[in-house]
Amino acid sequence: MEVMLLSFVGPAIQPEWGLSANQESMISTVAFAGMLVGAYSWGVVSDTYGRKKGFLGVAIVTSLAGILSAFAPNYISLLILRCFVGFGAGCGHVFTSWFLEFVPIPNRGAWMVVFSTFWTIGTIMMASLAWLIMPTYGWRWLLGLSAVPSFMALLFYGLVPESPRYLCTQGRLAEARQILENGAALNQKALPVGLLVSDHIKTITGEDDHESLENNALLSSTTSKTNSSQRRSPSVFMLLSSKLLRTTLLLWSLYFANSFSYYGIILLTSQLSVEQSGCDSRTLHSENIKDPSLYVNVFVTSLAELPGLGLAAILLDRVGRKISMEIMLVSGFVLLLPLIVHQNDMMTTGSLFGARLFVSASFTVACIYAPEVYPTNLRATGVGIATAIGKIGGMVCPLIAVGMSSGCHQTVPVILFEVTILVACLSVVFLPFETKGKELTDTTNLHVPVE
Image 1 (cartoon, one colour):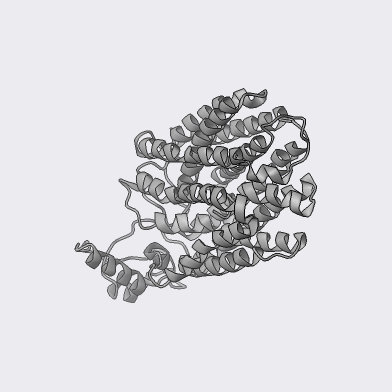
Image 2 (cartoon, rainbow, N blue to C red):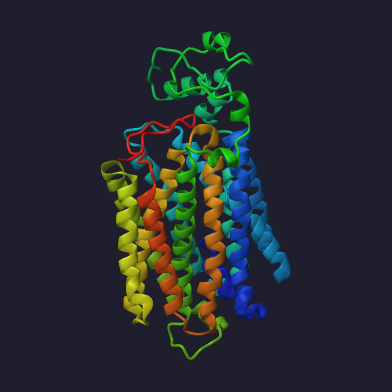
């Protein structure tokens, strides 16, 4: 919701405060800048101190900054507050990794799509809320109401468990065992017979800590051991090791290109909508915010993410992550092609609907693939840095999409979005690992490369 509202806030504030096109685009850019920093920061916090502590910090920062931005007295204060909201919103990948660590292999793809559905629900809710609120009550009410879900998240903090897989990497086997026992009791199941083993616990001499093993009966992990200093200090240098370098660089490229094209299509929708009356109007007026076509088009294209999620759910566990992304990116590229030249309203909305369907679906699969390919002790950090790289694309694309407000420069932005989709597709082609049906790893001893 906090990301989606960027499509509405800029066009609303621009005439009220007399902002230039660059100043308007800066509202989105600073939010993405905050997400960039937040994506890396929350990843490190979660890998070092736990998923749950990261969750608490995120909810506090996002909710407070979100509600305060509704009372921003001027442009500068609004930029600062939206940057803090972005900082909190940059944590989304932590929740994905957290949830992933609870899901069994056979249905992992489908369940991760279900989890991702709530992103789409948020975009649809924001489009609906803007349609109801903006024409009558204005942008301040929209900012205030969009902070409500973050406040609600604080209420659930005491109910959510820490990831047992994370706890095992930290040697907190008793806590991990308690969570698994609670889950088994809740589901009226019996835990498998065996030992709950942390392969990360070694003494200085390299011997296993037998006392910990004897006190924690349950599941057995079969991956190789890493030393405790490695598990306590996730580092970007580990992501650039020989075993992870190719995957890391290609994921950075994929996230940047996918983020750029995804947010570009969202902003393109609002910009083309407010300019649909023709290219003679070079300035956005307050009447544009009351024009229902803006909200109709954004709402309709937001609905495109629902069939996109359905498509992802069908393909993920059948054909694999890589082929799914390739199909979706090529389809999105083809559907965006007609917008290289000016089209009528129906054709424009249809092309944007189809392009968003496939590009959002590919983004969903990428966000599932990335945490699957990284080991537990680097998962949140690795995906966090990739997400941060993606936010750079989010920072840049408003400068291009919103820049159209100074004239009907539709062709160049669309061509640029097409090029980035091709870059994303090529990145997927060269990724070395397919994670379909593979167990999550706890160390850098990764899966066998795709043949």
